[in-house]
Image (tube, rainbow, N blue to C red):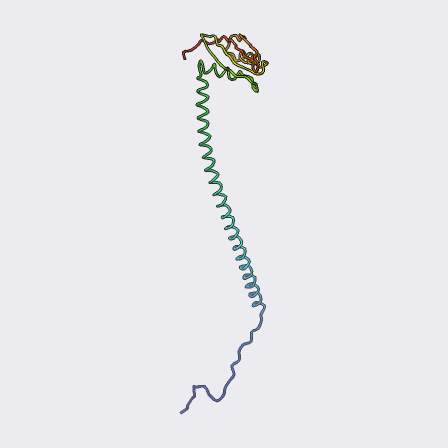
Amino acid sequence: MIKVNLLKDQTAQVRKSFAKPTVTPTGLIFLAIFVLFAAAMGTWTVYIKHQVRAGIERRTELRAQEARLQALKKEVVKYEKLKQLRQSRIDVIENLKENQKGPVLLLNTVIQSIPRDSMLWLTSLTQKSNVIKIAGLTQDPEVIPDLMINLNASGIFQSVDLEMIERQKEATKFSIICTSIMKPQAE
């Protein structure tokens, strides 16, 4: 009978030997590829983070600009409404001006005929049939001929004549007789 001891002998201790790492060219190539890949990934990550940060800043900037533009758009709409309101008022005034008749047209013509920067006051304006009498006062008698020229040039008077001029202490009193081209209308 043969006995085999399958158990390891406790008495003889054998030292295990570990394999020493050796550097091979293939290993160096793989290591270089890994380092390059890791560096590329790191660089790419930094680049992407920078792009994300720049995109967020740009988005914030654009949102602020959009808010400003929306506020401006509201102001433009407000001013457009105001412009339309004013234009409608101007249209009404122009429509009334076009439809003026009789006394209103006469008064407008007389007012527009008064020379600018003159000391001239009208005291009365009377109309009988197609004869209109304008009376007033002035400190400067030289403006009376200008008033008469302007009245004659207005186109609604057939003739403009000086009826009376009277010099007083502080002012000159005058009256002008105008013959109207238009027929008088009921007031």
